[in-house]
Image (cartoon, helix red, strand yellow):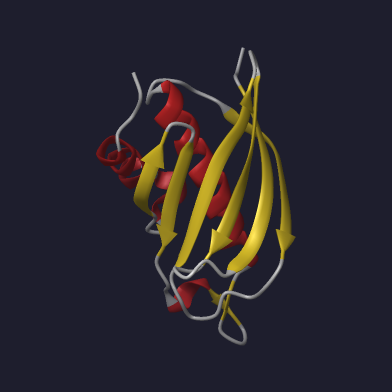
Length: 134
């Protein structure tokens, strides 16, 4: 059964490994998910730029939730590869990250994620591969 936005929000609210970021599930579709990374001073590096690891965490979490959104909360998959291109700095603003599954095979799931602002200005582009555990 596919997972709802409310079910995915409940999942990340309980997940210790992402709780620090305060992610909010904005939208979930069949194989896609958009998260909000609320701006906090603790995420800024010198110069007021949102740090790269926070954007990478948003991409990884958004893809994880896109997978669960398509295949259900109980479906498990693990990150096997995450590549990031930093395109522009995110400065003192909320960041949105939209992940999309491009291909789901028997063991591997491949997709992209993009971090952007509300108006669509692109900060990062990520390619993400997940694997189903044995």
